[in-house]
Length: 561
Ligand code: GLN
Image 1 (cartoon, rainbow, N blue to C red):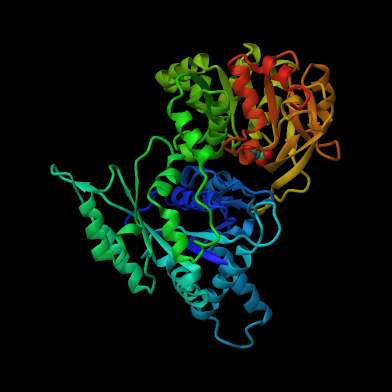
Image 2: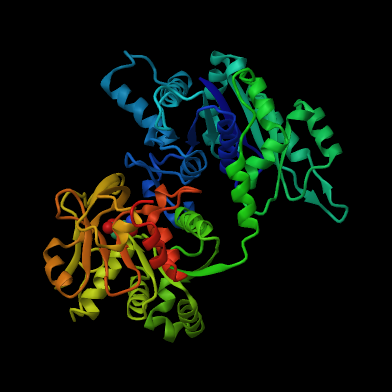
């Protein structure tokens, strides 16, 4: 196994994840099989209990792993399916070491950070790196490891030490270290400053790791003399100083790396030049350029709770992007804080209330994404009602599906207090209930998680057609509550159809309103499996419906062609 380690220096938020996944893309384009590992030095066992407000979205894997959103970047960029073990956290490592200690596996020895924690890290990396993630058999050629945080952080020290040992044990031909850093520009003269990078490289070298390549983030392209300085003071050949300056969209990053011959430097370091082909990035080039030249856009209202931080719904945003590009459109996403739509807000913050409604009324389609807790639920219900009554295409994801059930029960069935037990445990009409297998005391990893099968109940529905007449789909889940199976009969009689169910037939997965141009709710999260060039069927449906192209599309694609 060959390892490419990506570390970061100077500041966080440099786009290390995008850089690391772009390196993977370029290596894959050279005909190599690539896997990846993300290391998060925090103490949480996984990202499942972390707030999207603080940390961005929780990405969900096929195996139910709730992981850092960077794994979503890897899955999308490399078109792979990762496992929960591809995300290593301090919490996971300590948990495994402490479990062994309790079992007595250390035979009376003192258990220490070095060597026990560092050994556990090395073993974890080596065993996960060989798991195939691209659908083929046998291990990949290269494993890209991204170390989260910034070099010098106290919490990443054991990882740095473990990686130093790993580099030594696998040997120089099998290890390539790329350090991502920032080149700021200061003052009126606009000089590109190399000192922060020099310091962070020095810090890395003091810890026993020498970078083979530098990936320098900057607003403008690096000047030749900046590169020379970096080379001289950081001990990196000038040809190995890569520059990732600001680009119009992230799909340019692999192209930028290829244009600077990054693959050549990496392959040389890894002694892979003889087996690798010149990088073929045709599809990437086309996509990056197409996106830059898109003229028309489609207005999408995203009505959610965590609208302050775009990363909170990163995969939804990416899935919209993939679907829009397939329709030659630019997504124009209008974020609406659901609570601004509520009547309360008309009194307390009338301006926000008016603006939120104006945005909603201007939208060509409405999306209510997943979420937890009761904040903004009233506003989401109003948005679902508005979309239903005004024939505006609507996609409700997970919570968004539960919202449409509550709204329908209240407005159409007249059950004014219909609700989910998540928001009102006393409701006389619980249309959404706690799933029997859930845990009320433990939050981490106790939801219905990961890939589950949904069987279509009829071929005669929009969603089955969008999925190319498939009989079933496997999509990823993350929920604790579900539509109450006891109310399905009355809801269906009133016109809401549950066209997708799980294998037991008791759990509702997809709802549609046949009398509406596009009104779809799904209990799963289709956004996690959307890929550039292979958009999620449901997002595509939403965008096609928003631009009145859905019917024509379904007619031409009816027989799976
Ligand atoms: N809070 C809801 C539940 O637990 C929806 C979850 C979600 O949207 N991911 O079922």
